Length: 431
Image (tube, rainbow, N blue to C red; front, side, top):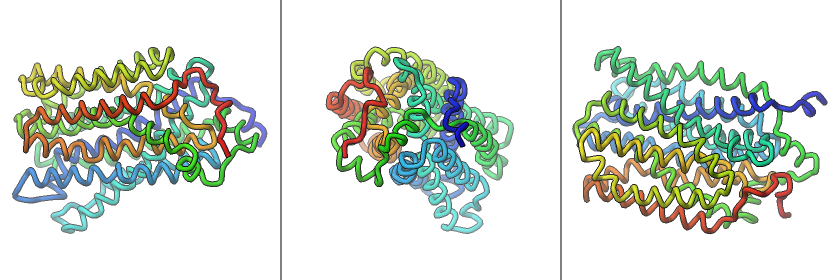
């Protein structure tokens, strides 16, 4: 179909399509994160020990991060072989079906341990879908970007993270206020998962209206496709993959401390009301969203120096994390605002930076794998490990954990090249 090859996406189409998909994906992902703290321990992992139930629930939370590299390899293969558009549609469908299924699962009371197994399988499906979604959405934006604006275009899919979290937290907050505790545990918690089906349909409609990215189409015309993108990444770009993974590490640790661990610890050890702390997190997420475009503008002048400075800020923040968190509501709010502001600053340029490290023929696979592997190292067990550290040694060790992650990220950043002036089309795969 020649018209499909020659028609170009408008900037509005590109930016909205990259944003709406990641917003839906992260909404789905975060409603699980919230439910894993406040609902699933009671309904899917009942036990006389509340801490053990929470830890079991957080362990299923980690499953998605184990599944992410599988999704990255699977969807990355097709994204680098047949195109970004079709692969993004499949990734969003996988995520959407898995999330909707959680909303209709029987609980432990109905089917016993089978409920826990089914929940884990659905969480695995969420991870596979997100592993293929993020990299493709970033490429949809950056491979359509005009010269000198890749970091700006690349920040739009990143905005899906704070928007998805804001919507997921807001809906849980509203339901907890509209429904009694018994109603919420009986059926209210299911509503966000079921509602995600509508959002997925919207995302699919938008994705189906766009055309293939010009950078990928041109590369395929030149015959640059490789048979096995994942093998090429490990054979020809292993060092870049390792450095890219480290580059994402502090971002993941910081975010899942701010979103999952703080909610769990605040509502248990520090005795905050669930609704009170969710409101505080929503304030912090506003700062998360605001800092993403700020960081993107700064990164247009150079990716590495901006990311190194922000990572150093994260390391310093880790040293004061516990003191702020334990200083009453004002201190906890300040902790969330500072932490999530730093999150926005590090997250804004991250997608662009990773995508620029790999040539077109393996860009989907390489950038997705780096991001997903960092998720395993920096996020999958972070809520679990942070809970164990805080319980055994004190909350300050959670901050030291974050500072250590920041040091590793700086090492990864020092190992990569500066990419702001590179032309996507000129970065080709080495046979």
